[in-house]
Length: 117
Image 1 (cartoon, one colour):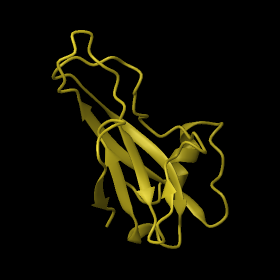
Image 2 (image 1 turned 45 degrees about the vertical axis):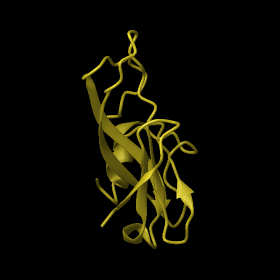
Image 3 (image 1 turned 135 degrees about the horizontal axis):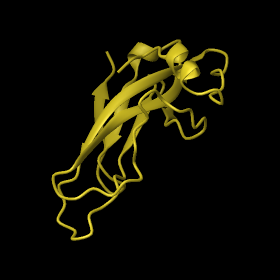
């Protein structure tokens, strides 16, 4: 994870926009492994969100910035298969180190909270 990856995100894609004033891009490296038993496999449906010290949630869906080594979530995985990559999220600079990541392995699973520092 890189808390201030603004330069890297802006360099990755010409359509990535500068973060709003007082914000920066963070990049989170993710590896997903499918452990299900569906015969047709499944697409990863995990989420990674940043929760600020004030309780606000940022998920990267508002900006849709392309991260370096962007995580591919549209491929079908079968039992034991993995995919990895990065997710870019615009977060407040002021308390960047005080937040946590809220990670959910799929849409219906409970979130797990992980400190960023």
